[in-house]
Length: 175
Image 1 (cartoon, rainbow, N blue to C red):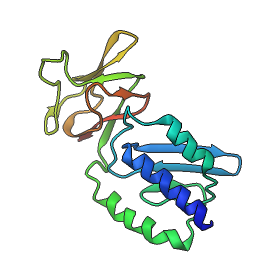
Image 2 (tube, one colour):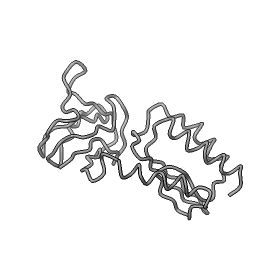
Image 3 (cartoon, rainbow, N blue to C red):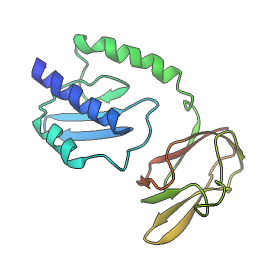
């Protein structure tokens, strides 16, 4: 991997981090890259897709990416130090081993039944299986999302009003 490719790769990673993108997949004929940042928040609605596409088009990334990332190719020695430091980040991740409640649909996340109402749950609350955690609005329908596990809410991954995708983490529950 030459210096230009490493620079382009760093720009892509910094862009994703700056826009709070938690996960990113890119697949080409000769390359498959999957980024998953430890402790990151889900994708921000303000991500500039055109700018991301421009960075991706300019990039001829061949192998590695820094930070807590799953790679399709081996990590060159020059990047291994960065990759090793991310291993300790994963160990200290408070959501490691927690049950993750994911969005079953695409829509808009709301943590309360109305804008002026109290939230359904917050970090530190104990929840039971079947308890309503949030609402995901899809096509003008308000879909109540229920907990599929009992325990304590240890993390909320999205903010109210934020778009969510199918399978996107919403809550971490410590059983």
